[in-house]
Length: 128
Length: 337
Image (cartoon, rainbow over all chains, first blue to last red; front, side):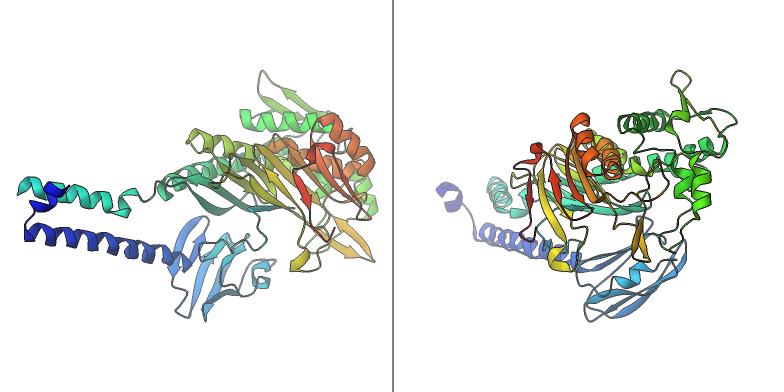
């Protein structure tokens, strides 16, 4: 190892430093990529239709088999504002900042922050 | 100079934390609306790509199966069997045949407390719109409910419902079977640990990355708030768990609770239990027997559980809890119970 270090030139050391910096930058870049999971993902029939940042307020109209569903993002929270499905259970889910809102009849799944609501109950799934 | 440069590059690559990224097992999850419910598959995998490939394949397998046995789709094999009731046998796929045969087995074992020919009765109810059929129509359709009138020809792979108007409804076991199917598919894609949850019909296999079993919450059938959502927690691996409850699809009229777990022998909702959770080696049996035990009521239900070789948590109509000895150490009840 000592021989390697001794035999390096200034350019080699500079290159080495650059590579180390690039590696560190990689960590931050990958962290940035992971943090995108706090975005809002809207899926229709199991296929990703839209991804929006949670930080920008907006209204999105998504068409499903029952008609349009209006999803609202406001102040880092998401809810279903209007629904054309028969039972409208998705409206009753209210505002979420993490987790999933589902409209089964309209086959729309809105996932915020990667979907896991942090499992406050400490369980991996619930039966019943 | 060239050698030095190579040495430096190798050294830097070894230092690069990204070179090792994605090799550590982690938990990945995906949810999709299928079978008129939400199916969530969780896997332990070394990378997101590996997890996604396996999960997508398993979800597709469920989707294919669901298209065969969908009660509401005219195109399904199940719909064809129902349309041809009393007319002619219908040739079906091995999956459909297998599920129907197992449904008949659970019906026989439970003395008809579970019956896949409940279709004509269940379709008269609408729990969302609070529609209850008249007593006369319940009595009338009861004549069409009898699992003994399902005729199977295994050699020809056909199913025949003996009388016109009969209707198979596999809703009581299909999700459990779908979980079994998805699990096999995940294993074929080299996934060694995960959870398949077709709503509350769940199969767990392998261990989590921290080496512990999967924790499954069992819902409190009379939940009042967020704090008492669960009645118990089960720590499972290599097992299936399913719950049938009177709080899933129901309405209350004149102080009486009408729910979707009909007794096939009377046509009315069974009143003996609030919920029944069954733990078994198979998703299909956990699903089917949870319905069968619920309809049987706590006393007969406990006998049925012992005969079927499965474990169960029964919450009776008064909130009393009955469990099988096999659950000792596997299920922990919450402090509020």
